[in-house]
Image (cartoon, rainbow, N blue to C red; front, top):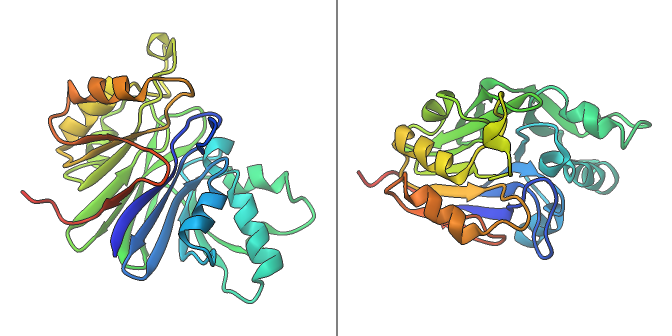
Length: 250
């Protein structure tokens, strides 16, 4: 079984029935998590009831991408202390942010911290983290195995690095916040759906999955905007959506 399942798709804060950023990657018997924002942990437990994951990647320290990592910490610390430490790949600041919630215990008792940006062998994957522009250090992540690549932007402004991150990816997961006024800022830290389509096209990605929707935004309109720039399949991340992974068919 090789697939990506959406745990959450909202940016900033969750909407009713939704969660913030998070994705579960199943690759044969290996379990990889990409981000754990608000309300993603219960969905992860619905997907993997035993809560056993092999590695976690967090793109940056904003709570809508990392706060449920704290719940996973407590599951391991109090409920599964005999398990080996969990590899955690993330930029500086993530554990500092969570440490404010657990000042009396050492998060490193559960997490084996591996800094991003960087390149690692993670189970069956070659994992590469690339620095992308945001309000805090953010690492776009690419995982590759058996000729297949999944790339995920986290949160980012427009940058040529996105073309490298998503180069020929089977699935390119890109934030499409469409936050009012963002395109007028002198320094860009988020993107529009149209820009997500542009960068997916420049990357030569096979499929584009839009995520990190600002609460209340019209997701169908976001897909249409991305389709105006990208001629491959464009999907909106929806909680519970599962996409099968495989090598590009071209």
